[in-house]
Image (tube, rainbow, N blue to C red; front, side):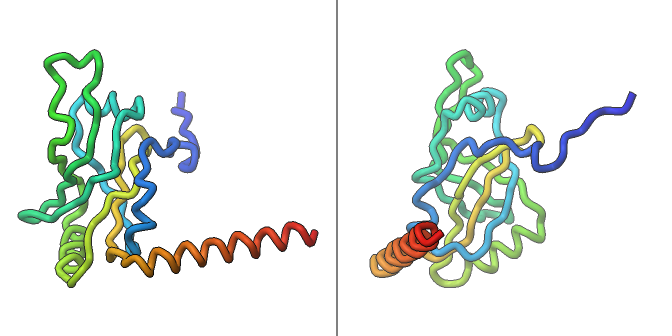
Length: 160
């Protein structure tokens, strides 16, 4: 009997963790999807939604990409198998992606920011974006643009 597989869209589960301020504080130019090396108790905690991406950032070291300050709460039933909540975790990317990211980050002012963590086909994936930090006036401009767009959409719906 053949195995029944779900369409690719249905295999992606809801986003577990989201870094809401990433797009507000950074002008993201490129995004990549990377696997993340987690222990058994960490993956159980992430499935329960017990994590936080708010202060996390990524760095390239020795040809590998690592995520720092990514908080995953200890699993309640994990006892001795729990690890440090803010430990450094390795991201799983292809070599060509790492070299591309490294060349981009070596440019002045670019940084790697984790934007969301989700599950794809049972595996935890971390979306990372390469972007430049916004200044205060850039943030104000993006807020004003968003408000104008919202008003335009509101007018289109009221006309109909």
